[in-house]
Every structure is written in structure tokens, then in C-alpha cells.
Image (cartoon, rainbow, N blue to C red; front, side, top):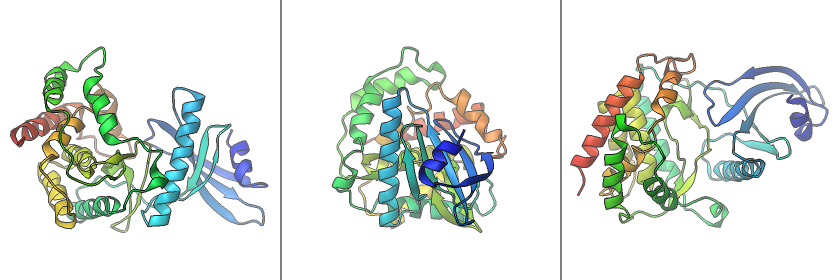
Length: 300
């Protein structure tokens, strides 16, 4: 199944071993051990994104390849993209040794590194090379105004949307930066206590850095609690130079993302990939409620 894809970029290669990567929702990913021409060994990741149409898939592949190339050039610790096979709907990436880490051991250091890496990502100026990325303001407006047919009553979606529509658009005081779009502990790789890679660049955009921070804050709250969320925020603030008044607005926008999805998201925490069965749909709903309440209380 993967031989034609890999032969496309590594002519004459031989597949030694294939193993499935856990955690993929919007893409299927496998790790492949290859023997290349000349008997050299290489381990790669083959990702096949799931999009609605073949053209949408090809567009996503081209965008990911270009974005990851840019990340490598400016020093963002992202996987090196080797090549794209548009016909078969796949991208082949560097395999980076490391583990997703959601334990409480060494948490303080990991939260600090997580915040510092996000701040570094947001320091790079955005130029014409990233012109293919959507503006976060554009997607946020769509998120706020385009309601699904069925609203999530358990998370008070109707009330949240009503408040967001009254608030939108809020001013942006910070320069446009590259946004990862899904910066959470499950997309970070660690090795010997060091953050070595940021993975899954499937939802990038250009916009206010507070949008990325808001997403990270909610996920850290779910995984590690309010104290860890506050530490993430404080560490990020200590190493960045941005205006903060709109953070509660972006927190409320980030609170839209889980609507009608928690029943699908929660079981992932119990898998061997994350090993956190204590994070449940119920605990995520409770955390979401606290997150929204705090954001509303902090609105200016």
C-alpha cells in the first residue's frame, strides 16, 4: 500500500517495517523503516490527510509541505518534509525520536518549555512565503457566525455564540504571526526532558498570537489543571512582547472548538498514546465551564 508512495521519492527503496502512529484524527499516519539504495537505513513518517475532496487533499498537502519547509528554514523544530505524492494523497516526513508526555512528572519544566517555544514561533515575521495561509480573523468570523444545525446544549453553545457575536469584531493590537492552530501537549514530542518537535501542522493560520495561546490554555487546563494553565500563560507573557487585553475574547473563541466534539476527543486520553484515563468527557466539560466563566469575568 505504501510502496508506490515511497518509491516515488526514494527509488529502489525496500520497506523493512511499517507501524501505525496513534492519535491521528484528520490524517492517517504510519512510521516506515526503509532500506534505501546503497543499503542505508531511514525511518520516515507517511501521512495521508483526510479531506472532503481530492483537490482539497492536494491543496492541504502542498500547504503542509511549504509550511514545514519554511519552519525548518527559520529554526522551528518541526519535521523535515521530504516530498509530496499528490496523486496518492500523501506527504513523507522526517521521523523524530521522542514521546508525547502527559504525565505530571517534570510538568513545571515542560510547561515552561511549551510556553517558550510558542513564543519563539510567534516572533518570526510573516512574509509573502506564507501568503497561502488563511487569516485567523477570517476563520474566527466564520466560526462565530456560521452555526451548526444542532448546537451543543451541554456546553451552552447558544449562549456563547450570542456573546461572541456581540463582541465581534474585537480589535487586534498585535502583529500578524504564524499560528500553529492546534498547539497542545498531544502535538509536542519530548526526549530526555527537552521539547524536540512540534507536530501536526494541519490547522495553521496567520493572525493574533493570542489565538494560539487561547487554544493551548484550554488544552493545558484539561490535561493538567488551572494552575498549569496559569503557569503557561505567565511563562508565555514573560518572554513575549504582546498586548494582552483581547485574551478573554480569544479564550471565548477557543471555547467554540470543542462544541459537539468532546465525546470523540475524550477517549483519546485513555489510549496508550496519552495514558491519561483520568481526563474524561465529564472532566473536560467541567474544565470548559470554568474556562468560559473566567473569560467572561475578565472581559474589558
